[in-house]
Amino acid sequence: MLDRLLELDTELFVYLNSLGNSSWDWLWLAITNEFTFVPLYAVLLFLIYKRLGWKALLVIVITITLMILFTDQTTNLVKRSVLRFRPCACDEIKDFIRFIAERCSSNRSFFSGHASNSMAAAVFGGLVLRPYFKNLIFILLMWAVLVAYSRIYVGVHFPVDLICGMIFGALAGFGFYKLNKFALRRFISD
Image (spheres, rainbow, N blue to C red):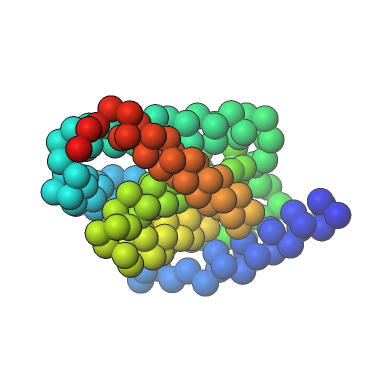
């Protein structure tokens, strides 16, 4: 059964990856670049500061730092344990896919750090700002899905890598949101 799931995952990857078009490569390379969205993060932090103040912003930045460290390191630990090759390094399909990333990393594929980190940030940021911007979480979730899909487009992750990464990231984002609420109550007095 697991073999069949992995086979379907590979087939879906090859199909989705083949939908790419060289006219759009620049966009997907920008979306997959981890520094492209620094302005988005800056705007979110500014909104948090404007709504909650400096003290709360400091607690939130510490919580975000811990969250990203947690998701990133857990992703690396799982990758070292699961040992699934990236599509661009998979001998059976690498000659049939569009690979446009700068390099095919030697680290493993399962699960995606881009997907887990972006989803954790989307859930966390959306929940923190939900009392002030009700629909922001939907925009952030769409952004996280685009970041995840970009990993298929550039040829470095299978769909299951992304789905598991997004689920893990969503759970981490929610858990750290709860931790942040506790820390704000504990350390910030109104």
